[in-house]
Image: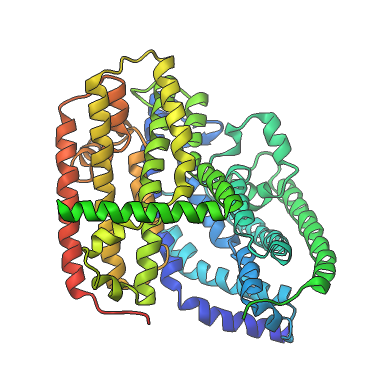
Length: 267
Length: 264
């Protein structure tokens, strides 16, 4: 645990050097917010309605901002990083460290999200709220969101690590990573609220992990959870944990078999 | 004129190299094209879904908006195929210190940068865009005469000029700040104002989009040309595209004077 904490501290110092790259979201996001405000103001006025698919104007505009807010919690570059380590031969050195590759990269992902919280999430929330105040949000909904977003971070890390392990077979997994990003945007609800998709398609999406990384945290953020909030929180949290266990087990099994066949290259 | 011809020749050489490279890694090319199409289609899919489940935007019906999306995909395909690698190219050579070598070449630095952007992978958006466009024209039984084709082609040319202006501005920032992550993302998000019908924006923003930041040239003018509903603002927008490109080049030249080497 001590080594793990030290790696987090060390990575935090490194990541903080790239604070302006993280903070770029704070400049990019208001542009998108303004585009979406114009777009949906026009649509809501033209349709003469206050709600589309159950989303009020503020919730609809914030949906797209929330997607970026979620990313500041859950994003990691693990899939591609594993591939880079294999191509450069760095993985062979990492295997000699007094901490497992899985835990070492987890520490890196945690550090990067702490920096993202400080320079992206916190100032971002302040700036976006000044542009369009999220009146739908309550203290309760915010903390429910944070809890679900933290579980989404762990889930996304497991998923990314599992996909990253594909590099042990195909070396360069950039295309796999790109496909995941597209799926995350469409199936996870990053592109458009999933309510706009057909019901049968949504039922299929229920059996995939993407919804629990993007869509559900957004729903808690927007305070759009219907029925008993606590029950829903437990239900979504439970399903996230199930996915985490499934991915973790798959990582452990596959890692043991793949690492035996691993042959270091590059350097 | 001779300089321009030389740059076109350089651009064609870069195209040949990129095509040869893409054919060498065919699987990667096919996969990259499909992924590129998926990324480019995200905006049109979003608008289509909104449109089919609501009454849509003022001034546009479903068939017209499909044509709009077809043109958007087509123009995005043209832009990213010709200039797709530019942002990566300039960032990379400045950071590595190779920009210094580029200054010694017998072409204008900006000319070389603009001639180095060809990326065959981005053809993925162009072909379906063209198919949707032709399908919409046939379905709506639109009359396409000489005037419509001329305005459409002029809009594409002036649109490319405007895009080159943005790339010049981007390059100007890069040679001054050397490395700042996600600057390209910032530029692309800003350019998204051009992906929607100008009728959805406020009066001030609408005016800005046909004058000072003439994004209307990319999709709005070509779509209105094919729909036979052009107005007096078209030549104004074209003129502002030229002005934008000219001002961007002036800024580039000023920044170039202040450039100090990096990398190595």
